[in-house]
Length: 150
Image (cartoon, rainbow, N blue to C red):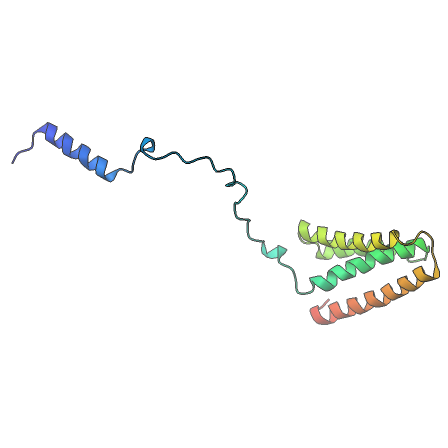
């Protein structure tokens, strides 16, 4: 059987309709998704944002340094200026991401503010608290260096 040209066109048109995806006009319109932008999955944390095994001790060390920065400054001890400098060195060494720097600075500020709210003048209790923080800081630094090197 011989196909006339208009039959070829009809067969090609029919094949195109069967193979092609449905047209946009034939689909039901979906309501705009308001929550779509809010529920996008968060990007996975980069390897640098994964907490180190010593982060808990390191954050406590930053808090101790903050407490000592306030207490030693309040009591005008000769080493008062060392504590903010030590925290700066700690942030430069361990603050490899902005989030980590923020956590370290937050821990320092928490320690500083906790004693700034309590003490207005240097007292015997302030000296005792500073002595206890010096002991705790020394213990933490030895534990961190002993377990994780440095």
